[in-house]
Length: 301
Ligand SMILES: O=P(O)(O)O[C@@H]1C[C@H](O)[C@@H](CO)O1
Ligand SMILES: Nc1nc2[nH]cnc2c(=O)[nH]1
Image (tube, rainbow, N blue to C red; front, side):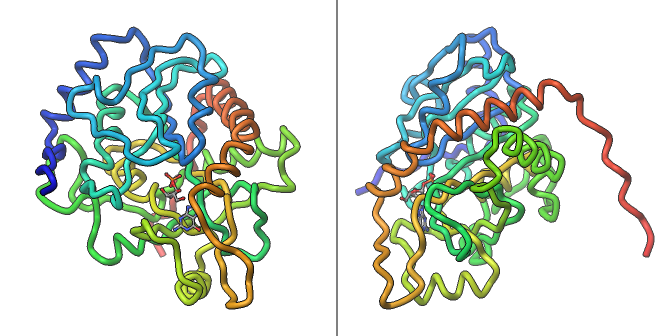
């Protein structure tokens, strides 16, 4: 029988972990990066690293999926203090929404202000090629629409408000900065912006399901990210989301595409260097520019 999962939804538990980490590193990260499947190399390029295996950190869950090493890495990227999750948690591993998103709340308590979350995803948009990068403009959560929201349950106001807004989930200023950074690197031919759709997994989509997702307006399909983004917004972090298109979702009964995690990891590993360069450039730009004030939204109509 499966062991009962620890309840990681409480402020006190999150704070205990944040205090434990604070006592063991002098670094004060402002940016947190979550490495998607096979994208752990993103953490390896940090300088002045302090590394904590998940099993050593109080209350931290364990990574169980290939391509997710299970280490928290503090360090500097382009001279900016960052913390990187080399391995994320997924609901299909059997973890609850509060466990999957536990690190986000810990980061918030550590003083992190920006979350950059990356994932491997299947391309639904006909214009996307394997190896392309999609900045996430918005999401659809089949999981969330079905009632599996990570904020389900009692709300502790110390963590965030009961009813957080999600129409601004993906920060437009960060998206512009990311697009500019991609352009500066000459990446514009394989970079897009689009809608990420989260499914529960772990099985990949059927052809009929992929067609439904396309009709709904999704550009890429995956099994993660959305719970992290919801909790990040709940606790006031600004979010940039990025999908690496590792495969094309099959949408025709005569198409040769067959999804496999091995192929996903192969493409991720092959594209990790480009992603590292992009994140390094973006982080440098983030460090350069104090946040420009946003125009005030109109309050009438
Ligand atoms: O953690 P991410 O979202 O990058 O991983 C994707 C979704 C599944 O975990 C896995 C399927 O190949 O890759
Ligand atoms: N749901 C889903 N997740 C993925 N992760 C990487 N590729 C895919 C895919 O095709 N579908």
